[in-house]
Length: 252
Image (tube, rainbow, N blue to C red; front, side, top):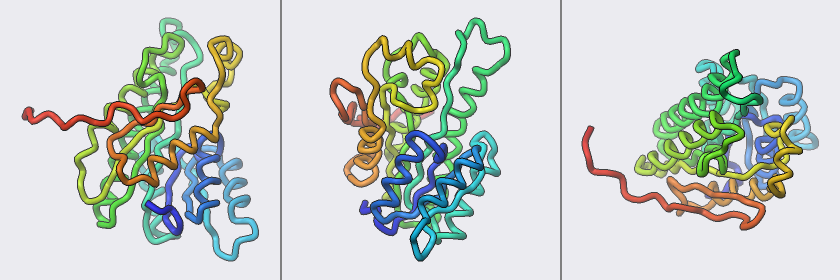
């Protein structure tokens, strides 16, 4: 897929991977719907991306990804402002800050709601809209290295990301030119590591954000990737692992 003149929806767009990806896509001629719960940061990014351009290339939509109506509004905004969508990036995410056995607040449920349930909803809506449009497209979900290997520091986050990878790989056989992939980066310099950065650095280097964006772009632009996961680590860079096997023929 050549991204020039294509339209992308990005959740968690106001910071981290979402912001960097929006900047990369617009730099290559795409248009973006920026979806985020942070209104101030989202509107600021939209203004930055639109600065000096004759026509708008970015619109901000306030979005709590756990709210179905908010997610549906992202797709309505893409249709209203740009005539549809070609790329869906389910990127919003959080991680727990306390050990699971000490969390009496139920915050762990919010981690599941945002990191897994909302990604399922975004993938579902994305497939629905792309099928209705009939012109194909690509969905890329933000998973994590913690979705490939156990992560004792954040077990609920790890469980959610394992789910995202399972969802992604199981959506390979959609047809109609619709592809679903995932990125699985190691820890990077984003908000999600606030409060635990020093601990993480004792385990090794962080992955540069730009390298993660390179992985997103690989999965977006190379049409041969479908149901695939790009692992990104400081030691080995980007590697697409476990090309999806044929689905089971067993009937439920």
